[in-house]
Length: 321
Length: 222
Figure (cartoon, rainbow over the protein chains, first blue to last red):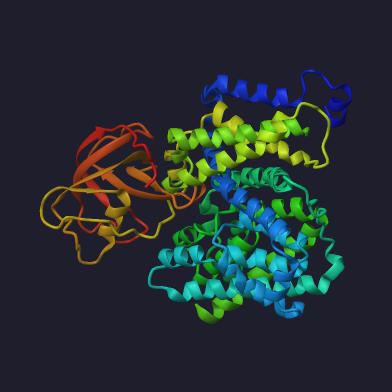
């Protein structure tokens, strides 16, 4: 049943009622599906899936509201005064500015979109998107707590994440129009459009967040980490494995340091790869970015970010750790 | 998705977040400090839902949303229809080979009286070189759920930092008592077998004097 069919017939029982009935049915079923649900694995998946959505929703909403506020209240003049006119210099400035957004990566995607709609160069906004979840104060503190007595790990994480963000930013600058970044039209300027923009952005990004959460929960539930551990021996394979795990597990950047610290089989450099790749790119972010900026963009952006993050983290790890 | 459907989807999600935060069920999924962000997000989402819900016409609007927005109903359906339980033995057994950053106990009374510790705290204390808390010969009480492997059973807790997806296992191996059913919450009172748990890869062993079934705590992670 497509939307247009529903609207053409203008039935008395429309989509909205259908959703309401589905939810009420689920409430009446009231947990009894738990008995039929195929055992512990499925229930664990359910818990993880809901956990990722519940944890991310307030952050996504915060990001959407901030993005709507940027689109409405932040003038292009202010942005122009804060950032260097030369985009090659503006990229690193945006990277360092990421320190100021103590949120997780879910908030960063709509904020980057808001900045682009406000007239910021995509390369500069995307640098901010990559840097903010990786180097903000909350992440620095949690990394220091997870690796006690190992300040080099914190320094290496900040450095490698920042370098990754700036390098990808410059790459975006070079690509220019060929990035095929899709942005939606700037919101109209009348009355309650702040609310309308926020609602629309939330619905837009929320579905992709749920899709990413489903995949991440499945990886966390069904792939035993001992599979991951068996390849920990070889340096290159270990780094790539940790990168793949960071991409698929899609953990919050505030908690991933604890997981990295618990992977005792891996070298410090492999752990660093995990910490640098995770906040920059994971399955949840890739889904949200392809929703926000278009699939053609995501197909270029996602592999480049992954490659640059793995290479940078390996080099910094070899140097500092 | 029609505007009214958008309103329903947002309102339902808002209601679920408020319900989880209000009833304390949110503790199955996230850490205690998330309560206020969840209440706030629920209220704001409810506000965003108002205008499309109050619309009387059924036409489309000029802000079409992608089909993916339908997925936002899914968490609600799962919360109501499956009512996912807190994570337990299944996950703990899968992640058993992982060793968390040992957490220093918040407080340990020095002396000779009985000690009440979390499994993670006992792991920390057992890993220290010179037994600083005086575990040896002292009665220790550890509470957690039961998990198993081929050889033994364990009193177990899951430590959660952000959301349940990042849970890390802390556990103490129990000797000298028959295993209770998996996932049952128990208090184990016993004495630490000196020398066990010094290698972070192997949990400390508690020679159990008694095992008492317990109610699961409100927040099972910790």
